[in-house]
Every structure is written in C-alpha cells, then in structure tokens.
Length: 118
Image (tube, rainbow, N blue to C red):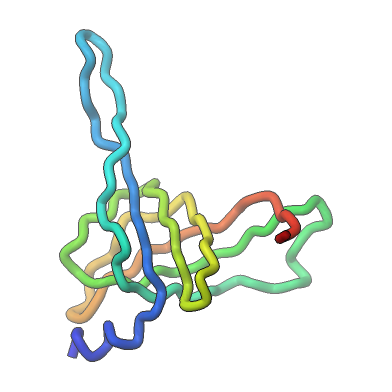
C-alpha cells in the first residue's frame, strides 16, 4: 500500500539538519543533508486570510507526509519544490512521527517576510 500512496506525492523535498562535530576544543554544528529530491506531500493547515497581519509576514502551519525510514530531527530545514516548480522553505519542524505503517508526518511552519515575486 505504501508504494501506491507514494505515487500520489508530487512534491519533492530536501531536508537538512545539523550534526555535531568538533574542531579541537570547540564543538561545532556542521550542516548535513538528510534527504534530497525525496517524494513527499505537503498538507496546508491554518491558512486563513483573516489571520494574516499587515506587517508583511507569510506564516502558516503545514504537515509533511513522507516515507518511513528517514530520521528527521526537530529543527530541520525543509525545502519543498511543488509540482509547479515553486520552492518553499519551512522551518521550526517537529521531529518526524512514524506511527503509521505507510508514512510519517512532520509538523512544520512557514514563517517569513512576504515578498513580491518578479
């Protein structure tokens, strides 16, 4: 069933996180790519025009549906390319919840300054 479900996922995601590393006596986080160009599905929630402020922010909650077997840490950066080629960056992601047989879910937030597309 999970293979059938994934055929309906037209979004592509790249997820990056931070791996602890050390440089002498200093502990430093090094960016690491967890997955790249992975099929997934983004489900928007909480997207209401009445809740948008006039301070120029574009903020809403979303949920990422992606296959099991990928360890997604809390705070990972998630770049989503939708079927139309539009790229959206999400931050403040939760750790993946893999309690389903067919997939896992990651809560994420898009929260950035609104800007005009050229």
